[in-house]
Image (cartoon, rainbow, N blue to C red; front, side):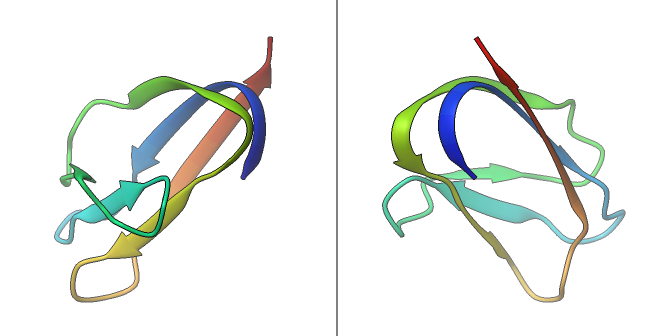
Length: 65
């Protein structure tokens, strides 16, 4: 996702966590059953996600504001 607006990330996996970041480094993570992560993404920023050990389903909802 590249854009300007609010982003909601939901980890739908029940076992694996997902790491996420903005530059190819992954300083944050979504564990299974975590509440949604919500943040504002600046225009032109690119969001990166990486599963820890197996593919994970992640719901990404974004709103232009």
